[in-house]
Image (cartoon, rainbow, N blue to C red; front, side):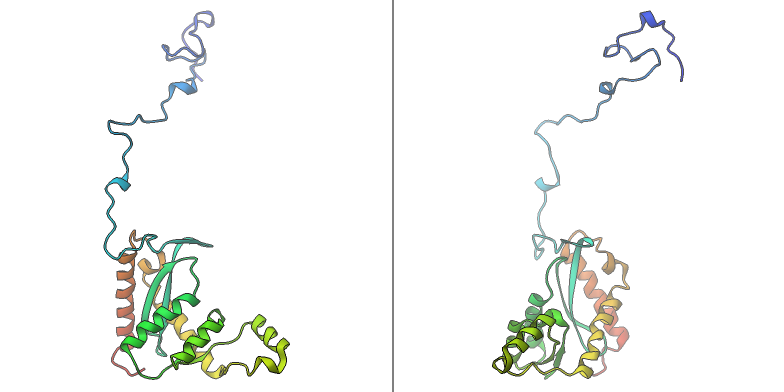
Length: 220
């Protein structure tokens, strides 16, 4: 380290602002370095002052904190050919079961043909089963362990267990494969878009492309 050219007895005081030498060894006092920027006229200004939410954009931008950080969850309704039929976006920590009704309601408006639903244990809530029976939708959803234990504890008073066909439920992985096709697009897998409507447009484009590659004109 280079020694200061001045003699020790004539060195400037350690905390003197007028000198550039803080000590005899040429070090700089900490307080001599500026670490903040003064506000300009009119106070501090940020992006929020001129921000205007686009039409149709949710307030939370479909972003929520889950185990993976800030993420967006894609809820998909797929057919037997692994083709995404409908999709919706929610925050990353949102549950799966509450989004089943909006998807089914939208599907019933566009397609009235009879069909069967296969879903995992996340959709095994009694309210969901009542909704499916009211809409006359056949389904294969396994029961959770706690539901089985409560039903068995009631005995005959619990009634018959819900109908379940394991061979039909084995095809439930089609929705996982459909989501896998969507996530082949890097923009869908990462969610780098600022707005949810922009991200939804990219996911919709990926869905159209996946359906076209799977044979959109085929009968499911």
